[in-house]
Length: 420
Image (tube, rainbow, N blue to C red; front, side, top):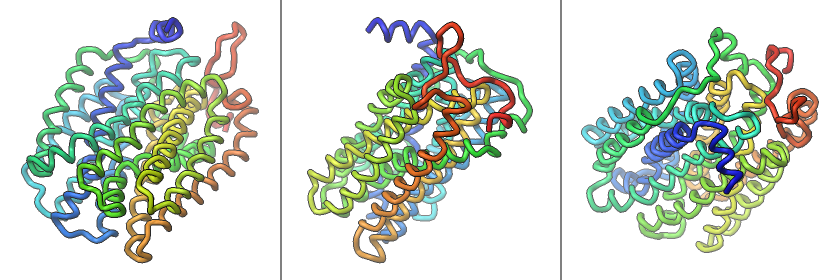
């Protein structure tokens, strides 16, 4: 407890809380179509491939919007960017309540829900911006635990959709966004680590090997998290013939593990290193997903395996973003947005792979095995790039490098291209 109090005193706790709440509610909105997938699919008699595509549209749209919001935050501030985004989300949800009444408008709504998915890089940078390097992993883990918004969506959206109709859930979600908007306005303070740099400097991570290595690994950790979280209600409903509400409750059990363990992943990575943590994560993800595909006849065993998989994915997200401020100390928000963008784009792969596998083979196994192979490929890449990482900007295992006074600090702030 004393250690956690020391951590809170090292930064600005109200801003960290506001960032968590902002990300939490945005994440819940982002996955609304996935949480209501069984209802929407039944309304329009969708094929398996259409179900996968419908679930993937908000993921892909959110991924594409992340980087522009990250760049905007560098010019108007992260707090202001978050408030602008939440205002747009309310307008988008109002469109859903009044105008969504066909499969085509569901797809259009998916694009608008992507606005909520853009929050990631800004939320993490705002929440961790007041904290020193040795606490960045934990601060980002707490802010990033806002992906527990998935739990809110899959827990509350199905019963509300059952009682009031799934279109009404959009209107209810619009009202809930008032809370994080008010907390952000009252509690948050813009961190002091903002740098005025050129656009070229902002996007420099796009032209570096490390940026793409981080992004590819994030396709597995975060892409797997958001892809599975969005598709699981449909998977449980189709595969095990449970009710729509029960499908949401089972998804909640799995996603809750990933959300909670994200904080633990950041905490552990501060101590043993993000590289070491990611290695174990990728092995667990590959093994648990392969078993999920092979054990598709047992609801209990499949649910437990999904819980293990989500725990690994959550820890992996925390571990990767413990490394980001070490590699890009002056442009953490934009680097995080770029990595998050590519990673979330990868999240669109899994629902489509699952839907296509079911439609053309009659089984979801092919989708599981495809993502398993991707996780193993990223593990092999990590083993190669970690050699250079620990020689240039990180300690062995991926910890922050100590300064002369013994305090762990981020990588040197000399030009990034010289450290690439």
